[in-house]
Image (cartoon, rainbow, N blue to C red; front, side):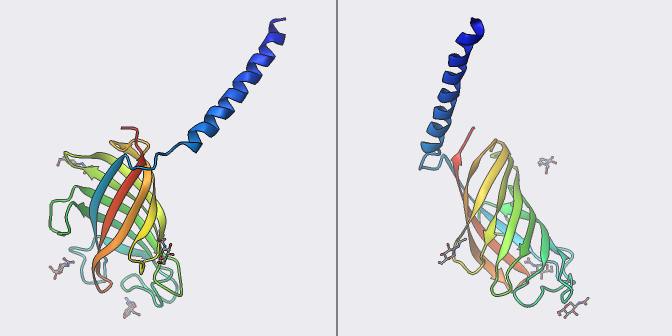
Length: 188
Ligand SMILES: *[C@@H]1O[C@H](CO)[C@@H](O)[C@H](O)[C@H]1NC(C)=O
Ligand SMILES: *[C@@H]1O[C@H](CO)[C@@H](O)[C@H](O)[C@H]1NC(C)=O
Ligand SMILES: *[C@@H]1O[C@H](CO)[C@@H](O)[C@H](O)[C@H]1NC(C)=O
Ligand SMILES: *[C@@H]1O[C@H](CO)[C@@H](O)[C@H](O)[C@H]1NC(C)=O
């Protein structure tokens, strides 16, 4: 008898859970960001002579390239690992609030385009924790959107979009990105 009564109850639970799942996805995330941050990201590529201040290195190059010069055409096939300072303004020498750590790889033979995968690791009085990023970076676009796929610490489970724009560059040695982060899911 008890088992018979349980079946409709379980069925009801099942329907209820389906309706709550579709419900939460339909109305979430909210259209307005729950947190907005702006950072500058400085990258100095190792070119064979600048070991002192290089923050990024080509660690993999196609057969026709090498690790002290970007490959031609369009840097295609180069894999770069970086540990770049992030600052609140566009000055490379401002005190960093953390590091951008990860890699980019150039993945098109017909234009400048990279795939980015990195974490912003914060270590300042204002922010502790990390944010993780991934996405396509067509460098010649004025702005490029990549995904904020998660976070830890102050950014526990965060998700959103980061809009990148190239703020400055010097040949292929140095570039500075402006990163406008809009989080649409905040748990803290
Ligand atoms: C790296 O250091 C060299 C030598 O000190 C300097 O000439 C160069 O401007 C520095 N590069 C950047 C991007 O600060
Ligand atoms: C790397 O490639 C560049 C450009 O082709 C070339 O000028 C340079 O000599 C090469 N460096 C080494 C160490 O082979
Ligand atoms: C964070 O900053 C503190 C104080 O400057 C320092 O002692 C600590 O080593 C830093 N931690 C990391 C992971 O950089
Ligand atoms: C790059 O720019 C083109 C044209 O402006 C746009 O259609 C495309 O969505 C942009 N790509 C990204 C990843 O932002």
